Image (cartoon, rainbow, N blue to C red; front, side, top):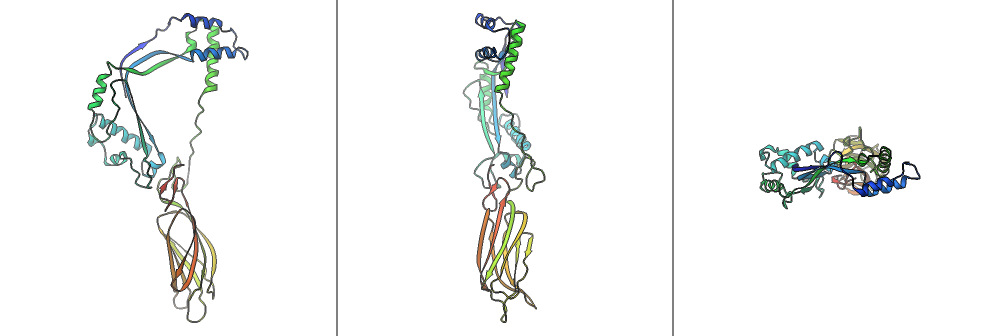
Length: 346
């Protein structure tokens, strides 16, 4: 937000200082690899552009950086964040009533991560105030608190600062057409050599589970689950003969079952199951059974909640000495920890 109190402008054909004219006369008529250093020295002294017009007044600028992926996993798009911030700032400066802010916007502006337990906020603000009194630019986003803002606006007439200016290429000041063209070429070369490189094209994720187009997780507690049924030992089944064990396990809506092994107290399956992309907040429940003619006999149950990484677990059985299994939970990008519920910036 800018308030312009006054402006000043250089004429279209400003007089040149004697020193500047002398420097122009010392430049060679030819711009080549042999004379380039002289033109570069001229640019280092006078720059590439000159200020033609300056505007004085005041400016209030509030810069907000968004942790895009943390906002996304909390259910907010960059557009929603921008709209809510604009509304909140308008409320704080007295241009809108607090009732203009929706309940969803109020929740967003509270800036609290409610999905991953992260201690980070998804919005960070920096306020810049130019001109006027020593107001710090503190503005509520929830209620009208514009008294200090109005005082600052009033003070700009007596305490202005530079809020904007217009630049014109330096070569347009030079009367000699040959030197003017040479300086223009030298400036273009200088800008080309010193330009800040463009950012690489943003990464895009297409048709990947739980990832938005800009590669942010859309929901927390998501990942890929792989389970291995390893072995059991010391099983006790029928009164006569050895058990014929198999394993059944459940994870949320997923169910898998091993083959049964004939007459074995110490079965060894070592069978892998890839359950694919899952919600990571369910319980993994493993059951060992003994196949029988009339009805199967339940030998025991093991269960666990998921943690990121690879884990080998075991438990005692009600009708057996023990059972062993393992699982690997690979969290979606930027998620980690218990049940993949922790946000981890890339």
